[in-house]
Length: 257
Length: 212
Ligand code: SF4
Ligand code: FES
Image 1: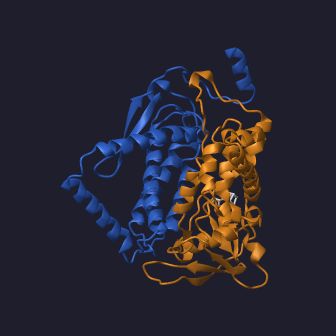
Image 2 (image 1 turned 180 degrees about the vertical axis):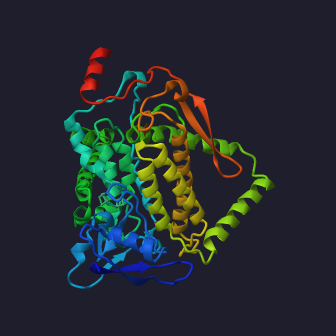
Image 3 (image 1 turned 90 degrees about the vertical axis):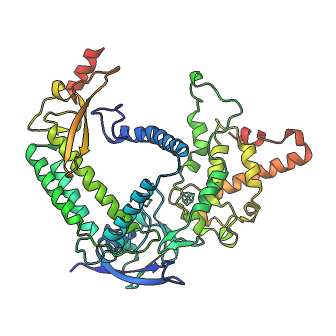
């Protein structure tokens, strides 16, 4: 008989329950099993009603984020064996600060709208005709935003963010990192437009650089760095629009590219 | 969608992804536009939709007493298709896969779900996907049995040569009233690049030199 480990999973069904409860399952403890393997074992063999999101099993799709023993984790990249040993069960819960739809599945529509709101595409004043060819970019120019482009929208940074916890209207770490991904792109001319969007989010100024978002990010996006970077340029722009309204706009961000 | 005809017997994964992104997006947009232009559904269509709803409830959500689990059938299906209809296939291996898939499709009717909820029911989704995969798997095996030649990633070790005379064609597969597969073909339109021999290593270098 193989070694086993207990997994304690949050359960909630809006049709049946008034509040979440938890259920314990004993699953085999294989050395190479991640938390997601345990969940799938439960669903396949023990209880087909256990509900959770996942897809790629390789840290690409960003859909398997959950709280594991209280920390936001990609369950496909979190080994069960790291929690074995002291005999206590591994606790798996839905991502913190999000409304729960069922069991481990959270409602993310609000987040999707936030992502969309920062206009995450290249904005140009003048579009080149296709026949004129590509907008070229040097490797150095690519490096300025590449890190921010690695985000997989897993939401771990939101579940780690104390500002978002207090104020769910806050646009949040990943959306700001995504805005910076385009603001810092040498082919983009939309920083001014995006600043208008971000300026509506006072929450940004509430971010005190706790840096929890950066710590939990599985893709080393460093959203906290993006927020700091954004705040700095936004402050300069604010001053400029105050002192010399004719000069405000893209200049600061443009020169950073 | 499965026959947009730009890749032929080309490599499978990497090309089909951009193909999906380009043609998938176009198909989605076209479907949305078309649906906007449609009249409201007729009673006939609504009755069909209600039938399907009833089927899903009877076959999955309200059913009790089935004995098969999704995961068991799914992994037996993986095993059968992987070993019988991988890149290298023969009449025998394909026939075995076909028989196994037939058995699994029968056992599928005896499926039982633990989840009877109408909220985010991923088990129901899994069951529907499995039903589709069993059907698509059977279609793949049937057309591979029909194609007695080798081309691209379809390597019939019992028919190693390419046969343009009979098989420079797309296979179209239809469901007959009795549920079995019927195969027809449609010609390939060649625009710029005629099919060539697929070679690797030294042979491919020789071919490249010759092309220059
Ligand atoms: S920034 Fe990092 S933690 Fe946040 S959503 Fe993107 S990948 Fe996930
Ligand atoms: S399953 Fe895709 S990131 Fe974990």
